Length: 366
Length: 135
Image (tube, rainbow over all chains, first blue to last red; front, side, top):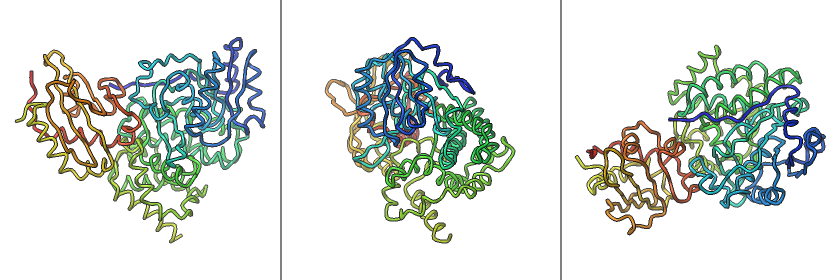
């Protein structure tokens, strides 16, 4: 027995109009300061007759920020809650919405937590509007928050975290900076690939993974060059990849990126981009056959194409950081990351030390 | 062949756990005891209980429990007998089993999430115990 979960999805140009169905409701819009300075929040605010707005810092959210936001949600009691932003904003709202109704620590939002038993009712209709094309957070059950004290990322998930409605409107990514096109594009690509390789993969997630991979490879570079049609394709594919991994899970690329990103304060997408190719090579060496299976399905060598894109976009810059002295810490945090469980090859500590050592050697050679 | 959830079964299970390097590595910092509960269904009339104290990569104490009210464990893991049989046979993944509600866990979920890999290893080792199932 397994489930397939998805919110309602409105997508394509003008899909923001889906908000007009709620125009008479009292809304609370949460977005970040940069998106507000670009005027994106106005596009949403004007769809409602009664609305309030909360601006948050444009950075990966901490659990303290989630608790703080939950208190504001409790005070405002909105009928509609809108998260407008990248994965950081959407994840923040996901966590805050749950703890605004249920008195638990954010870390206790796990796939095994029965939130209904704890009193969660889903009081606010939850709309997520992504403004980057990568995390897929608008359709997933996953939440990532930073734990500042322990310098780690808390990986949470629960079916009740899934938004009610995802609005995937390309208008929000037309001006996306090239650097973000690359990092979020690799994030989406990793979701599609890792979902296929996951030990929890299933026919539903496989179909979505393969379609997302096909669209991403076809459009990634053109999107980087500013082709708006390609941007739109990438935006939709990120949501498709999000659906794939939310119903299948990810693996070692994400576990390593979470650990490395938390220790060195590297943005999620950049860490994912850097680890994607080395981990796929590692899997291949360990005999993970599904990489070949995926290549056969899509009609090209996945490993070669990921490498080509990695070189093209110079994604391994983060390995220039002096990380050798932190290998033990990276390994410990990776082993504690729940994403590792569904990897097609679950490494031991020595495997991980070997992999990180190889990455360090490659840097010295280059 | 030891009967499922008997003292002999627990003894054999603990022996295999304590021999496993993979298990030791996965839970070397773990501190927490469990009460495992098998809920009755068509093939089992009375519930079964096992207590297991897992500490720093080893199973340091374990036994079949007659009266669960005498046990105060940090974690409780429970499910129907038919689902336990499927779990031990490898037909249910332990993580999927908990997500879909076939098994219920009480205790610090956040702590368990950091040791998700260990859950799989615990089940894989239980599968190695030659077991006689009642009913």
